[in-house]
Length: 150
Image (cartoon, rainbow, N blue to C red; front, side, top):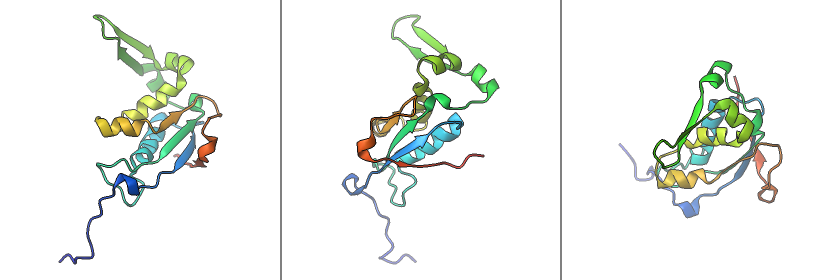
């Protein structure tokens, strides 16, 4: 029997307190790190998680150029995009992406783990990835967060 004092709480976005976190990607595996970042962006780490509300936090990732991927996986991984013109498919390998735009590797992995709708696009804008160890978000006072690695 359910008593009246035990009701499901649906949080409004105005009631959500958003924090800023900074993650060091040095030596981390791409997929494992991306799943943890997506969890924080979505807000699933909070006790008042509501699926249809943006209740996640902001995440700043530094040292994205030092992210790790297994050797065989790195040889096979390809990133493709489409220009919109006939025959306009462009493919980049993992190594090419690491040399030109290393922050896009982690962005691509995290955004692929978010919902594919308006809410997911809004949540994705709270992710800030930088190749080096400097970031322009010092005014927000992001707190460092570490994830367990195996």
